[in-house]
Length: 141
Image (cartoon, rainbow, N blue to C red; front, side, top):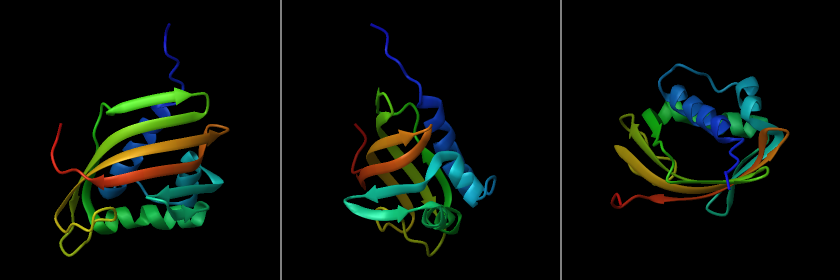
């Protein structure tokens, strides 16, 4: 049986945009956020609502170029599973912080390595909810 993978390119585009924010090649505008998120989209990290709605999501993504010199979501993803409009992705994020900045997920001050397990619900091809658990990577396996 062949796996159906309808949304994987969408997530590659999202994560590329996140990396481009740090490199100064993209902006966190409402229109850019709407490319990926619904108007009432929610990001829940480690059980806490990180951002809800386009304005709050934009504010979250505006932090990236303020704190990080670089961010890379490592590809291939560690795990990628789709079931209709529900997508689960396990991936690693490696980020180099700007001097004096503190990492969003780990509180580190120079380099951040995070393992993320995220469940996404899509509506009309955009994220309506992201529920993620993120933790510092202690060693690569």
